[in-house]
Structures are given as C-alpha cells and as structure tokens.
Amino acid sequence: MVTEHDRASERLIVGRLAELRPDDAVVGEEGTDTAGPSGVRWLVDLIDGTTNFLYDLAGYNVSIAARTDGGTQVGAVYVPATDELFSAVRGGGARCNGAPIRCSTTTDLHQALVATGFSYLPERRTAQAARIAGLIHRIRDIRRSGAAAYDLCCVAAGRVDVYFEQWLGPWDVAAGELIAAEAGCRTGSFDGGPVHPSNVLVASPGLFEQMVDVLRD
Image (cartoon, rainbow, N blue to C red; front, side):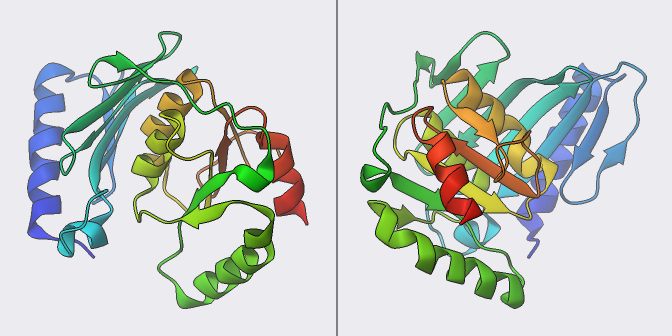
C-alpha cells in the first residue's frame, strides 16, 4: 500500500537531501534511486508501517540512514504518534529525544518479550505463524507493532528484549539496526551471521545466542 502521504514524504525528504547533500546517492522505498559520487548512500523509508498509518495506529515512522562502504554511519527514526526521535551516530551511542538509551539486560529467554513482524504475502505469513507457534511457550510473550524500524528502536530502548523478522527492505533496517547496536544490542541474522534485510535478529546480548538456537530449532 502506498498513500499520497508516502509520496509527499518522499518529495520532501529526497528534495531536502538533494539540497543539503547533492553529491550523495539516495534510495527510497517508493522508487527513488539517485546516484552520487561521494560514497555516501541514504536509505529512506518514507512511512514505515503504512498499515498503521492508514488505521491511525501508533508505530508508523519515518526512517533515514546514511551508509558508506564502512556500514551505516548515522540513523534517525521519528515516530509521530509519540513524538519520539531515535537517533545514533556510529561510535557515539544511541538516543531518544536527546537522552541516551540502552537495551535490556535480560538473560533468561523465558522472561524475554519478543517482537516480530509478518510478510504481506499470505504463504509467508503462514510459515511465520508456524514459527511463532513453536516459539511462544519458550518466551514471556510476543509483540507485533507492524513497523520494523520502530521495533528495532524498542529493542534499543529496552522496551522489548528481542526482535526478529524476515523479508524486509534495506530501508526498513538500516537506521534502526544502527540505533540498536549503539544501544548495546547484538545484531545479526537468524544463524548468528551478519545482519541482512532478508533475515534480521536483534537482541540484548544475553539473549542473542539463545534466540539463534531457538530459531535454528
């Protein structure tokens, strides 16, 4: 689903980046793909959680990140419903509205509150639901906000202990993953390897390997 507001957000953000950073590349979820010679590439999700936005539910957000060959360098996620701006600079920690944030210190998987999301494709959702059925008795509970970047920020702020999801886009992950990492989370994929948009696992450090084992099962 794409609304007129997605398009308006794209015009505003991409236009502003073009003014401020004319030599950078910009990739947006709604089709923007401009090249630039600087070596910096901006990844922009104009409205992450469009279904939430359409139904006037909290959690939808705007996610913006800048990447170089060395990885994501800066990221920001703004959540209008709560007026929260999550942000991070590589090596500089993570913040919410300017205040430092840290992930939880939970180490007992049975006490872990776990966030996830589901694909738009019915056949993928069926497989994801089966995974939840095999997981839910091993954790405290499941949460599903409907917006990947917001979920990543919730792990960063210690509001949930774990987040995992499949089949995301790079713009869904880039800003939130940096914010989570700078807040002390471990980030990677279901098998414990490097994070990838198609396969994302982010958790407090004491839970990461336990979740890898559970997802492997």
